[in-house]
Amino acid sequence: MQVPVGFLSKLWSFVSFLPFFLLLLLLGSIKAVLIGPIAAAIIFLGNSAVIIGLWPAHFIWTYYCVLKAERIGLVLKILAAILLPLPLLLLPVLAISGSLLGGIGYGVFIPLMATFEAVGEGVADKLTHCFLDGTVSTTAGACTVVRDATDFCFHSYFSLMDELIRKLGDNETPLDIKLSYLPHSMLAVLIAVPFDVFMISGVALWKSPCMLLKGWQRLCEDLVGREGPFLETVCVPFAGLSIILWPLAVIGAVVASFLSSFFFGMRAGLIAYQEASLQMGLAYMVSAVALFDEYTNDMLYLREGSCFPRPKYRKTDRMNNETGQNNEVRNATSPLGEKKHHHKTMKALQRSKTFMEAIQRLRPIQIWDWLFRSCELNGRILLGEGLISAEDMEECIIKGKCKKLSIKLPAWCILQCLIRSAKHDSHGLLISDDVEVTNFNWPKDKVFDWMLGPLLVIKEQMKQLELTEDEELCLRRLIMTNNNDKPSDWDDCGFPSSDNIRRARLQAIIRRLQGIVVNLSWVPSFRRRFIDLVKALYLEAVEAGAIDGSRSVKRKIEADAASAPGSKFDDKDGEGSSKGAAAVGIDAV
Image 1: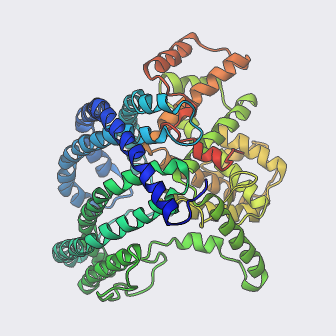
Image 2: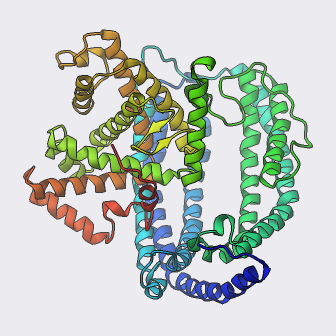
Image 3: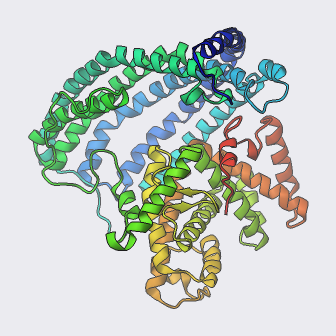
């Protein structure tokens, strides 16, 4: 779009925008008042019923798994048994309170935001969409939130507990604590928690007026000049809304600082335990305030550094530094030799920077969409080859038992991406022919940040293995049909290589990828989206005549579709959530 130039043009753009914005705000507020209570009631009552109903089972099963787990030592078990009642009793209270606040926020902001989105570019019949968008979709979205919460409480929780009571490997040792370290650790917590809560909250309150004024200044400048986040026409209506709601963002930042200060204080006890020194724990107590002060200075473009000292709180350097950077990512992406790979690395950095300028940074939902789109396309291939059976899909749809299919299919999709990246000598992960994901454009989200390092390491391992085409075809069958737990599982499997070390390395890679997928399956929306994917593949296979469809399964799919209108696979996590992936050309394989 054309950006206004000159004072008069900018002033006219601002004045002409005001009535347009106020009308949209009034309409969105009316819809929020009418639809918001319904959506909030659905989320609050639905989540509360699930949480209260499953709480006795969660309480008993948590104690059982903690006491049975081999990976937890005796002293830690006793300590956990003494301390567990407090968090288990507080959990339903906090969850229900969060459901109430989340339901109110969802019911108010979703209709409001949908009203502004309806006037964006590419929307036909804007007037109709202004009145209708955010009404039915908000109610349906509230039901989806309850469904995801149910999946998390019922399936993800018990899957997590199954991992806890899994037997120890040959080289694993139980996790335990030393009683002699506990006194100074507890003392460090008792001192650090009130200190950090007082100091960090004080720093946040002291800088909140600066955050309020600087935020308003920046938003107003961008609004008048149509720059920054308001350059695109679709984003302009949100400018006024952001200015009005900016004080809420400042209040939220102060509250978040207050809540995080408790964790900073408790981590001082962990540091004291790890270093076996009360002095190191107290040093971290002071250093945490300095780190928070430096972070807020960077966010608000204030002076560099901190007015608080940063004492050293580690006796020796550890593998993971305290700035939150992932050393595994840095090591995996660093050149193997400075002289040999210097030119290549510089070209990769320049390409990544250009790519980042083109699409800025990938969002977590885009990576999430790519994974399920890849599962959809690879699922068709595996179904045609007979590696996915109709019985597997029917069991997933009818009984909800998707553990085998939901772990092995995504693991194969990720492995195929790693193999392709290794073959093309990619600097990061090549998720399509023209989209390369590196640590420059990877989503800065903790869940995804923990994934990138291991995946880049596995990619380097695949590059060293140099798989042949026959080995790739055999791997696809082995992942979907074999256990891959021990070397003997591949006996008489037809794998082209007879090298036992090579086989063991591939089995270890497969097990690690399956472990990553297990962790991803705990994300609330994973189960819902994967079951929708299986339903879509099943109906497609029945229509194509690839399998003989069961009437009971068809009735189940039709009943689910009737009870949840608009919950098709392509709908993803709400309106427009899949547009981001398509916009940057993220296909699948």
